Amino acid sequence: MAGRKGQAKALDRTKRTGSTRDAREVFLDHLRKTANISESARVAVVARRTIYEWRDADPVFAAAWDDAIDEATDALEAEARRRAIEGDEEYVVSMGQLVRDPKTGEYLTTRKRSDGLMTLLLKAHRPERFRERYDVQQTGNITMNITKDDDAL
Image (cartoon, rainbow, N blue to C red; front, top):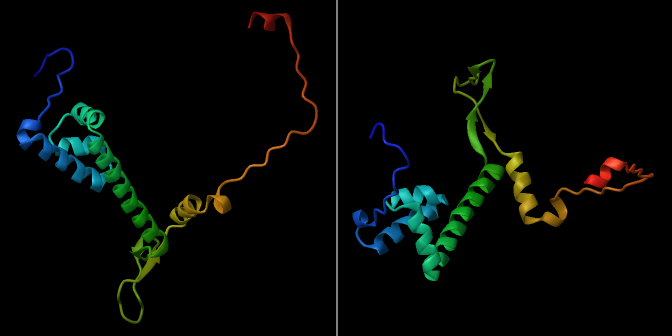
């Protein structure tokens, strides 16, 4: 409504989806696919605040929430691994044009893999070998000058 001042109240819309249990199941199903709490609440037609109240009040729901996030994260990791190792087919482009095979006339493709994802996966699964290492050593003298102004600090 134009001209309204202040924030609109968030609506708890669990009644539209049927029972509270149905809304919880819809929320968890979508969370399992996306790991996105806000979007999952919208799909379940429930206020985000309500979802957190359910989590605080129901340890079974909280555990299911954690499992859904883990499942979504596992799917992300599997896709990262696929992109790192198998990659995706991409057309070969040269000077802004698709390149054709001179013999067959077919567009050429190449398999593009992700070195960045490979690095992240190695750091995650073998941190003792692949993590960033910094060996910082101080040599020499450190000089500090204390003035009268420093006493005020």
